Every structure is written in C-alpha cells, then in structure tokens.
Length: 308
Ligand SMILES: Nc1ncnc2c1ncn2[C@@H]1O[C@H](COP(=O)(O)OP(=O)(O)OP(=O)(O)O)[C@@H](O)[C@H]1O
Image (cartoon, rainbow, N blue to C red; front, side, top):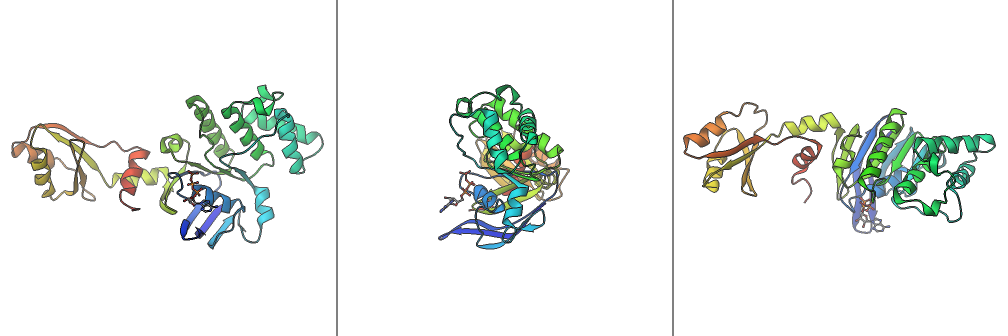
C-alpha cells in the first residue's frame, strides 16, 4: 500500500528526511513517532504528493508519487496538523462543500456526508456552525472530511494534538475503526503512549532518520533482548556499580537517580548470580528488578544513543 525507498528531502543544508525506507500493508495503522522537527510532516506531505522529494522513491497503492500525483490524491486522505474551517457554514454544509469538490453529487452526496458524520460520532452537530465547534469536534469533522472520497490510505498529522484526554480516547477509537475497515493509516504524534495501543506498527523518526520500525510485537521482542535491571543498595552505590561492571553477564552499567541500571549481555536469561555476587560482597540489596517492557521503554532502550 505504501512503499518508500531512500526517500529524502533537504531544505538547504538541513536533511529533513534522510533515506527513509517504509513498507506498509492494507490494514496497517502505523504510529509515526518523533519529536518536534524530526521530519514527520515532511514525510507525509511527500506521500500526499504535496511536496517533491530530492531523492528516493515512494509508491502509494503501487503508484509513483512522481508520475501519478492525481491518482494518488484520489486514493489518499491527508489531514494536516492545522487546518482552517470556514465561517458561516453548518457542519453538513461544510462536508457537502468538500464532497462536491470530490465530484460527489446528487442524493449520494448527502448520504455520504451523513455516514461519515456518524462514523466520527458527530451526527448530533450536523446543523451546528463549524466555527462554533470545540477543538476536538473540529478534529473529528476534519477526519470526516478526509474520509468523504473513501480513501484507501489516510495520512493523519497529529490528529490528537491539543485535545483533552477524553477527546484523545475518542480519536484513538476512531483510528482503530479505520484499521478494521482495512485502510492503511499513518498517524503521527510526538507522544508515544498516545498511539501505543492503537497501532499495529510503529516507527520512530529522529532528525530525519527512521531509527526503529516494525510490528509492535517485533519491537517489543527486540527490546526484550536488552534486559535492563534496576538495582539499589543501601550504601556504597558506586563501589557496587564497579563490581557489577566486571560481571560477565552485564554489558553496560549506568547510575541513574541513585539506582544502578545494568544492561544484560545478549541472550542472558538467568541472571540469578548477579544478586548473589552483590550479597556475597557484603552489599545490602534494597531493590532488584527487571525493567518492565512496554512500548515506551522498548523505544527508549532501542533508540538509546542512536542519533547524536
Ligand atoms: N519549508 C521549510 N523550509 C525549511 N525548513 C523546513 C521547512 N519545513 C520544515 N522544515 C524543517 O525540516 C525539519 C522537519 O520538519 P517537519 O515539519 O517535517 O517535522 P515534524 O516532525 O513534523 O515536526 P512537528 O512535530 O513539530 O510537527 C525541521 O527542522 C523543520 O524546521
């Protein structure tokens, strides 16, 4: 559905998107995560054919973004991070206006608009003025708008930004529904937990580099290969850290906020000799546990130190 090969965009000396390779299938909901300015919007705008790359290729539904721009625009629904709405229009008029611009006419037009309003749970506001909606409601209408022409692919740039927790949950439920409808969705955010449970795939971009990319369970599995132990001793923390540095099962030691963080060497699963070593050397253990792996800690461990 979406395939990119070394997709690259430069602004002067700045490489905003640096040789990104992506491959997404039907029904994939891809969480595109990265801090401000990391290249998410630039990538999405290239896929939406609104911006030309400097190098590389991208295909949307098998069509090249260089040579099939019109067809791709029909197949894609792109929701930018900020969009204006018009004054003096009701919600239904607003959607009908855009449906008309997609050349949807006759009785079908009203029907499609009402269907999309229903999908985003906004039927109750069909006659409200668009400029009197809350931010969350405006986002939902924006989503209804990009769904009007039944796009196969949705590119949603920070759809949950600026929303209250309840509205965020509603947007998340909507994303799940879109995946179930077999659309391919790229949804960006700079907050990982926001996307963790709705995405089937996740990618993390930093300074234009896609540094992690995979199915959620793959990412978790990779992160588990890097087990991190959190250890506290009553006294002589630095001495304990030095002792553990010599331990053959440990590949890295850090002291973080009064705790020793010990990264296990690859493929070490039984680490029972580590607490024994500390105890045998007279240290009083007050904490010894394996860091819990959720998607957020997985990302942190996989991306530690990758981009300077
Ligand atoms: N038109 C432009 N001219 C010059 N530099 C630009 C332009 N658009 C974006 N950039 C730069 O490219 C980099 C990537 O920007 P981009 O908007 O893609 O990031 P983003 O990940 O979407 O950020 P945010 O989370 O803040 O929306 C940034 O350093 C930005 O300053």
